[in-house]
Length: 334
Length: 208
Image 1 (cartoon, rainbow over the protein chains, first blue to last red):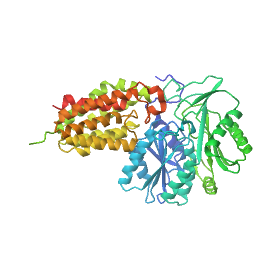
Image 2: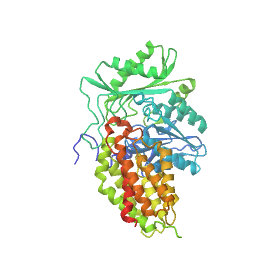
Image 3: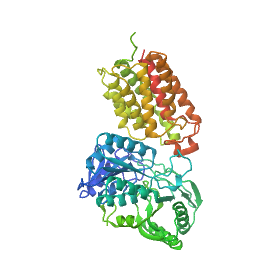
């Protein structure tokens, strides 16, 4: 019997139920292959470099929501917060990759790295040209240690997928798209704050709770706790701190141009995201940094966390032009 | 002199015994994972091994064939440990033939360990399954060099893997799930390493 306030049928069928609804809602854009589970665009583009991404479910609309013209060719969803299997990644990649090859966009988590790496080896051995890029933008888990897991992959994934999807659509080669992805990753950093942890499907427990007069800094997108808990302050001050830390990590200086993403973690009202974006714009303005492009919305989530993340990407002419290229997916379209 | 080998029937019984001991210890494996990761390890490995148990063919006449079934079961097991165990058992599948001598088992354990290290990046001391796989591979090699029969070689490997797994409790994690929870996993045995120990210990009843 269900005993939590979630609009689900049960934890066991959760991922499949979500994908079934998603595929029905966007039948003109995508097709869902049930087993092995992956989502591909409805109108295949076999002549260009294919973009394939994936990871655990629970981050919707990432990644399936970014399948379509000008972005991903295939998305591979695992169970909630669990990497997809090599079998899924291989089947999805083979379904969309032509002679131009495929770029696998992987978020920096141990499970994703292993499963995608194994898939890439097997694809390579079977004659499919693949390259992989690992997105690692989350400042919260940055450490000095060489062998440490390092920064997690979070909302910068969206920027990588948009920019590289556009480049692939323009006819760039696999090496060009992969190098571009590496460049975007190197120039992108994110940081997230939250008032709550995440509640898994069917679970009555939240991964963590935050008292009403505090806020958790440096949270992850799997309900991971943050690195510090601060007294609650107006969003102007919270965003100023996020911006300062990201700016420092990117060595942002007056005259730089950035693409900014203010992203909801699943349960934050759109109004508050816009409010935060306004504060971010003010911070950047005062620092002389040009906010060249911005995106506000709920894109890279952690189920129902009531938090937000800020991502900045240092942009150049090429990145901005690719950002502006047309895109037509379930979650992003212009 | 004929080199003593593990037979296909023994390999079959070994894998079945491994499944049974994992099922019996699923709660403990999950509990260890809850303290160091996300708590689904016992359920996941049980699901994989039950599926493997259903696909093992008692009529299979090659040790390599049984290990291949084990490897492909883990390949579809998902998560972090699934593909790592898959590549490990694949090492055994490729090193063994109709039978498996102690030297072939050592070859398999070494190749599997190399695959796991390459894919996962973990080294001994990082509090992962490698902490049991590495000493077990060494023990198998030493035994094989001394021309031990498979039964003895596997008993040595079991002892080495168990010691390796037990010691992970004193490590802080540098790789894998437990690395994200830091000090919270201190004092907890790595469940992946424990599963490796259970695997070699399962040979005792099946291989004699």
